[in-house]
Amino acid sequence: MKAVVCRSPGELVLEDRADPGTPPPGWARVAVSHVGICGTDYHIFEGKHPFLAYPRIMGHEVSGTIVEKGEGVETSVGEPVIINPYLACGECIACRHGKPNCCVRIEVLGVHRDGAMCEEILVPARNLYPANGLSLADAARAHAGHRRRADRAWHGDLRAHRRTGGQPA
Ligand SMILES: [Zn+2]
Ligand SMILES: [Zn+2]
Image 1 (spheres, helix red, strand yellow):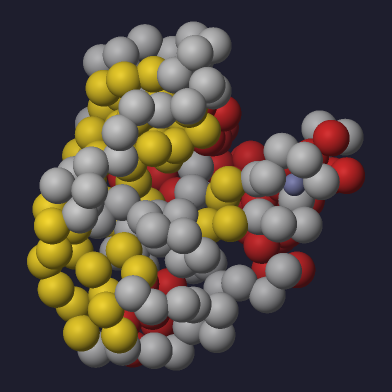
Image 2 (image 1 turned 135 degrees about the horizontal axis):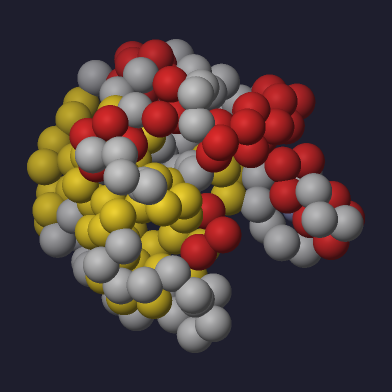
């Protein structure tokens, strides 16, 4: 698949990357529709993000459509979704107590691991929210919109992320 890769600060290139493959249990493969760009992306591009390893595929404000789901995933193939880019580990003490927003190993798509400036991406199903009638262009902006129900979860995640030293915008 095609991916936009930030190889090093100031160097953005289109590369061929391996397809993400079949999603593991609890995960889904999402065909990326829209990706928002915010201050975090500029910081990464400019080399000013403090916790970033290059090369990196950016893109954390994302909408798309589920194209394949792993075992146990209830959302349907074809469902338009918004991706919550904060990936909790599922194993630390906070995660085991049902507080994934406080995960000590939280990773942000497009920051700590490769994001969505590519054709398809694997995401845990618990990070997917139905677009609920929003257009996929608007859905990609929901992260910044702070109006939807899903954002309330993100606010908690943002606070956790700040504690771990990241710089979401
Ligand atoms: Zn955790
Ligand atoms: Zn952002």
